[in-house]
Image (cartoon, rainbow, N blue to C red; front, top):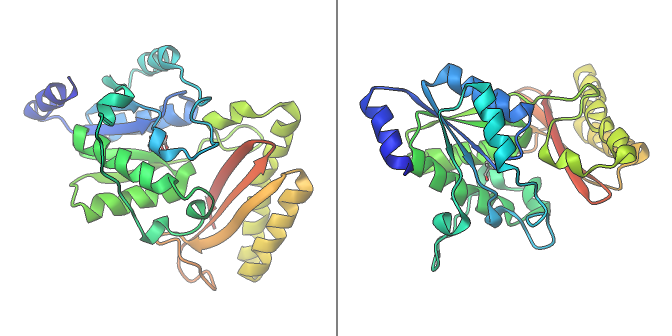
Length: 271
Ligand code: PAF
């Protein structure tokens, strides 16, 4: 059903933009769709909760599935022409036996804590990009490592698609918008707002010339003191490769992942 519509757009000479999502759309997703409309002519949005990017014990079963309200929000936005919401067996038919492995930007950070994640993201990313063959695909910068992994994968496979990042939208206290914020109770929600504040304080120290390793450690301590139960990492990395760096000679990014109760939050900012 998807392909003939895309083919019609192509024949009409339209530029095609694509926004892949797992649904439960918030303002951050809608901003990606808005930018997609600005940068492409016709906009396709996918909604698919991808089982392959969830590990055992993660929230695949409880991940919010809100197709009807997602459809309403996209209709209201006036910026989407098509929603592709395939069933699981359409994406992974019986006998599906292909896996993907990405190194480079996929190494470390999220992979250290969610080793299944980028394999699952790469395969669904490749399948969706091949199914829609857009001119441009938008990925939110909130999942910064994911954006770089998809960009690497698309380049390595020779997919002629621009992989573009869209800005992180934040709540009033700075918490990055995420479907998983809905898991937080009122107390946890207060703590969650500290993640961004700690990153901002770390950036201020880095710009003053404080040593990178020292700033990372202090930020981890500050997150624990703020009420996070586990801090997976606070890391200052090269913004293009995510390799470790010793100074700020090239563009850098600070990335963090931490847990409050059962909810794992990630955030990142340009240094
Ligand atoms: O960021 C997401 O919502 C997902 O990881 C994506 C890119 C749609 C792949 O399932």
